[in-house]
Image 1 (cartoon, rainbow, N blue to C red):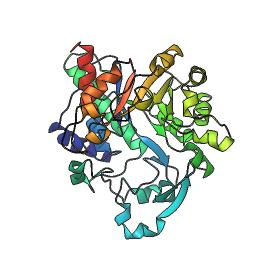
Image 2: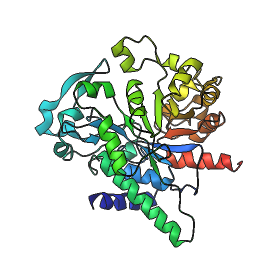
Image 3: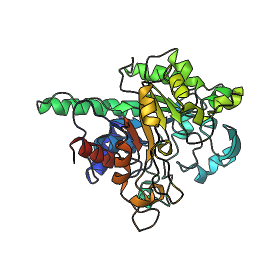
Length: 370
């Protein structure tokens, strides 16, 4: 009931904002709502996920970590996305931890029970770039992964009912695209993410290679382990620099740049269905922030039998290449469409975006030859 009440609340908010319902049938390339419609509402909230679905996203993407009592929620350091810093009862939980080899200061999900997390309220993570979202600070709870799945299920059912009432074929279901965050770190705390994730997905009907789900990770080992226990589609995330942290732990000298070679892609294809590369690996930026010459990564990945889902496309000037920026400062919206068109022209199979409505419009316009 709480999930449905929160859903209807955001549905009413979403009426006043750009919305676009995706066409029935299989959509390619897929539009993946990065942490929900996070340019319009605080990320990782049920409201942001619901708005993303209303805007036409094909998949919604939650990051997953785990609480002290074993419940899957959003990201590891919760000081940036909740009001925990203003809660005196949790002041003594502020600490320094080493996560994937780097020091981080703040409040961490694994030090809180779910009951404690539920007393917190979400806030905008990027207030300097998205001040319009700060008006929602303090309004929304931190959802569990199960609550997110319940929301997706309820909205899929509503969409099917609406299509039936109009005499239309049932629409393709909205999918989920969870990321396992810092899997080696949580395994070291005896709080592994993977078993609970698979159990939760199966309980909600996500089974087999054709399920509307992708499971992603920046590490390699946990994806290989998952391949041994599930047929669900897996995605190897690839950063523009650095190394998978499980490689660091076991002394493997390879980095992400080794994974995007033809040999590396062939190895990935043995356990994953797709790669999720930083967009800079597809079209690097020049020193003047203009888009450079495209690489061969999309073609090489396709030759290895892998899909390519690039991340992350955001509309604020701060994130755009020079030619797509407006002249109104880093927080102003520029021409996200022009950047997206450059990458869609490479033949990518999907993209992560904070602006799913814009992404859908650009994708569908290109499909119609506009």
